Each structure stands twice: as C-alpha cells, then as structure tokens.
Amino acid sequence: MIPTLNEERNLPHVFAKLPAMITEVIVVDGGSKDRTVEVARQLRPDAKIVQQTRKGKGNALAVGFGACTGDIIVMIDADGSTDPGEIPLFVQKLIDGDHFVKGSRFNHGGHSHDITKLRKLGNDGLNLVVNVLFKTNFTDLCYGYNAFWRDVVPALDLPDVGLPQPSDGSKLWGDGFEIETMINIRAVAEKLNVGEVGSTEHERIHGESNLNTFRDGFRVLRTIFSEYGRMRHRRGAGLPPFSQGLKVTPAPRVTPPPMTVPVANPVATRHAADPRRESGHLNRNAGARRSEDLNQIHGRLDDLGAQPTQDLSSARARAFDDLGSRQTQDINALRRSALDD
Image 1 (tube, helix red, strand yellow):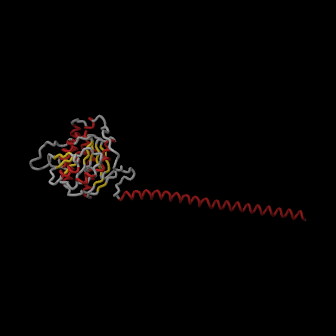
Image 2 (image 1 turned 45 degrees about the vertical axis):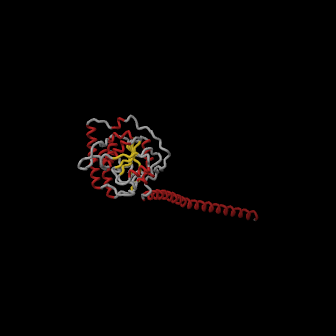
Image 3 (image 1 turned 120 degrees about the vertical axis):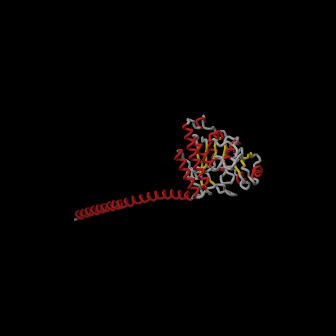
C-alpha cells in the first residue's frame, strides 16, 4: 500500500523494486498535481488507484487499508526512502507468528542514510517515553515501514474515512504524521504480537519531504500521552484487548516464493555502512590473536623451564658415567700391574 502526493518521478524506482510475490498494489493519491496517477497506471496496470477523502498521511493510510483485500498489508513510502526489496523479510516474520511487524533503522542490522542528528535525538527521546509508559522495547518508534495481517486492522481503530474535512482546513486527529506512532502504540496496547526487522532508510530520490522536525515531533509527543490515556480508559472500562478476540495466531495463509533478499546475518547484525561493524570484527580477531599469543608464550616459558632441568640431568648423568668409567679403568689397570709383578 503506497500513499502518494506528487511522486511521478519516484514511482518508477519504487515499482521496479517490488518483489514478484506481491499480488496487489494499492496506490492512495492525495490530490497530486503531477502525473503520479498516470505513471502508476503505466507502470502497474493492475494497481488499484484510490483517492484520499481528507488531507494528511493518516487519512491516506486509513483509505488504503480499507481498499486492501490481501491477507497481508505492507506500508511503504513512494519517495524511495523505504526499500520494497525488504518486504519478504516482513512477510516471513508474520508467517512465523507475529501479528504486526515494524521496521527499525537502529537495530537488527538497520541503518538510515537520511536521518539528521537532531531527528535521531528526538526519536530516541520519544522511544524512551513510549517504552517506559507502555513497557515496550521499541527501537524505532517513528519509522513508517510496517506490515501486518489484514485481520488486525480493526485493532488500530483509525479515524473514519467518511468524516468530512474540517472547514478551517485543519486535520482531524490521526490524519497527520502522528498516524505512524498511533498505529505502533495501538498494536502493543491491544496486546498484538509485535516484532521488528532491520530496515535501511534511503534518502528521498526526488522532491522535498513534508516532515517538520519540531511541529511533527511535538505532535508525536502529544499522540503518545493521548494514547496512554486512551489505553488506561479502556482498561478501566473493562474492555479486553483486541488480541483476546484472536483465537490463534494468524495462520500462514500465504507462502512467499524463495527469498530474493538475503536474510540478515545473525552474527554481523550491523549494517554494512556502519563503521563499527568492521571494528567489531577487528576486535574479535585481536582477542583471538591475543589468546593465541598468550598460549605460545606460556608454552615457551614451559620449554625454558624444562630445558635447564634436562641439561642439568644430562650433564649429571654424563659426569657420573665418566667418573664410574675412569674408576673402573684405574682398578683394572692396578689389578693387571699386580698380577704382572
């Protein structure tokens, strides 16, 4: 499912990397002024094109979820920042038993080529707040690359797509960038099995991002506390979490073809562009070399300790043998002299 807004130059790059396992492509357009819709139809004639009912990414996602008919829904961006080639990794996690899987740029081998130090600092702070309040272990709260079974969409309880746009041009709560935080939190608040996979975020290929660090950061913070209050209210009212209505973990209803994306190495978990990856290998080799060197040194010390003892024993044996031989020779000589005389 791909939300779009003036992305005609980016779509060819994104569509070219869609895995062959994809059976349905939903493009949700937010009123693009360029040829986004035409390009999408040219690239993928079977793509389903739907229009947003209000402004904002949150509304785009809600409209797109409603249009999906497949067993699994995967959210990717149209600007090329999320890699469609990673989709099989998300799908495999779902088949293995998770209800909801989110990408992480900061763990499991993930990486970001786009995030700034300021945004990284803000993301870490928001992660900390959520993990403390909701007792979770998120490593990347504000990343929108997610996949989940379509059965769990009701648990997310997104804003009604049929509501009208406010007359003042503002967005309804949940229609903006806060939607990604809202989805992630509601997944854990409803006790779904939430997993993470490493993902590489790339820079936008063309155009400019609509993200505003401070405005959207405070909106996300407001979302966190709002969702915490919502969770407490539902628990206080005795409403059971959505997961209790799931009899079993969703069955593996789809079987993907052989993976075209290599599974992350369980040993080298850092991204290839992370310089600490090489340092880790060097440190481990150095430790192994140090152990070998110490063993060699201990062996040499043992040899040095044994050799003097061996030398002394040999010298002592040779001295006694020589002495005994000389004494025997002298006695024999005396005996012969006496007999002669």
